[in-house]
Length: 134
Image 1 (cartoon, rainbow, N blue to C red):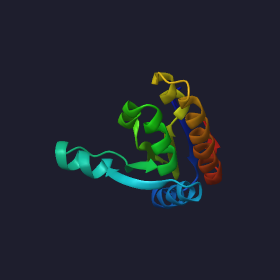
Image 2: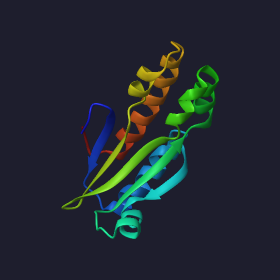
Image 3: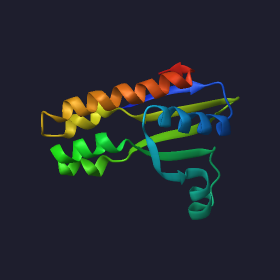
Image 4: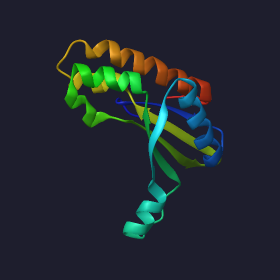
């Protein structure tokens, strides 16, 4: 994967992985505020076919509020994007931004505790999905 995301690869269908991801996020207090169907959007806008992929805009309101209270500009990074994408051969990848990377861009030292908490919760959600962590 990358140095700025956390991910797991599931032996699951895309549809099952999307449902499981929503549940795993909810179980750690994240709601999904936005959803972008990348496959449908690219087909409509560019008439190209790509594997199934969705971007879920996940938010845990207490963490978002705390982060924006410390540094209002951090709102440009919210909600946290969680991507679920079909990887072929019955595999699906779930990948999300690593909050530890986002905090490197912040100027306030207090953001570290918010990022640490967010990373722990998102990691817990990824672990709940199972699969192979990257």
